[in-house]
Image (cartoon, rainbow, N blue to C red):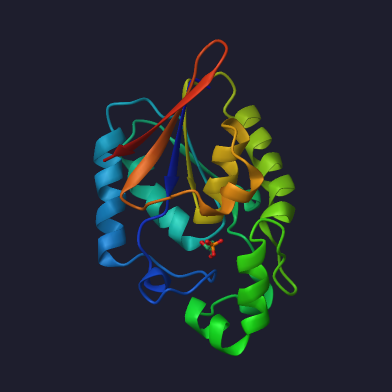
Length: 196
Ligand code: G3H
């Protein structure tokens, strides 16, 4: 793979409410973002688009795949968003109000913090790394692949390819109106944050 395009799913109803996790659908704006991405990538040959098992990544990937000549969507559970356990589906402000110990511990060490009955960034790393290996293997010798992921997952994928201090990883900026283009050259990896 020479070009890895790392996309975040389009806007969801949960995003509008500042809720974490869940399996929300895209809003009209999210669908428009997916269509804009599809137009943006249509001149590139993309044999594979990798997604998580969540609706929001599939709904973002479908228009992209449909605009290609032949493109397979491959769903990998390894790319599912960080599991917030007992906090899944909650709003950040609800967590601060009702589970202040969670908000406090997470703020103190976001990388190592593990949600009750869920995951943390540190525990997410192993499965995301496994997903990257799978995606690279399945994409064989194709030059270009797309991964449509989630905020925490994309932070982990970026840090897999580009060095980041672990304590900075949970704060990497992952917007929904831009994507990361990770370019492999012979001996290094470069990246660009691009608008579409
Ligand atoms: O649903 C999970 C969020 O996208 C992860 O973001 O780790 O900054 O809370 P956070």
